[in-house]
Image (cartoon, rainbow, N blue to C red; front, side, top):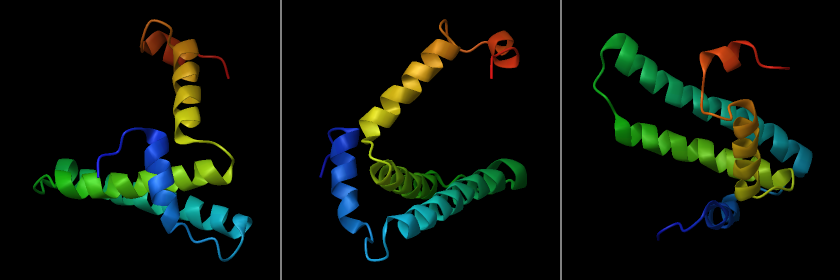
Length: 111
């Protein structure tokens, strides 16, 4: 199945959400899950770059998919679509770096 949009992805994967313990419990589990999956991505990169292991790009893609699942579910739990989250992020970055990334703006940014 081809995924057409971020929102289509979100609808497809949310069918696997566990709603049996309530929203607060699920927020906690998803937050911990997101951190755990991001850690797995980080560990694969550490092993490749820092320890000389063979690159495992398919495994990285698998773990990134798990990260995306948790992002999709947390977005839903807080009442947002993935498209809304992505748009908000792009707008924030355009305001922060109107001409693209610069070290000067990064070092001297407000807030």
